[in-house]
Image 1 (cartoon, rainbow, N blue to C red):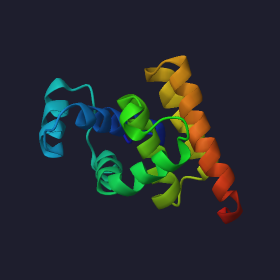
Image 2: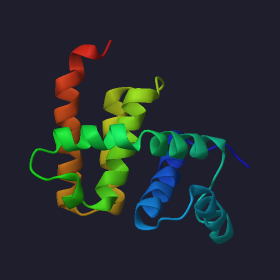
Image 3: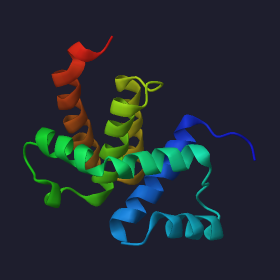
Image 4: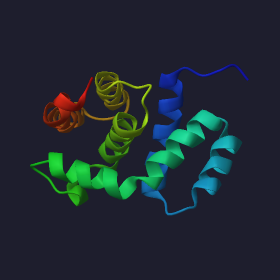
Length: 138
């Protein structure tokens, strides 16, 4: 199999994390389903991003809640939660992904899969986080 771009890895991870938000199935089961339908590639990079994000869900959701001033977590569309979790995971735990890149990629994901107001929401939450933490960068 050819190697995937970071964007492709993120896209596959997003689909799996979003699916996990919709269903209470174990992630291994979702990997198996993804493999069967052959629409989502599950390789080591995808697994690493999915499992890393899922492992840190509590922490990531706390950050989302903190920077989503207008709505609580239960009122945020699941598609946005999936995008935000991945972006924040990358910002916090993937030293190869700069904050700006993670935010740009999250906005791209939103533009691909969500509504226009979702794109603004994701950008707003991540922008607020970035402003609060910009002094920590470099």
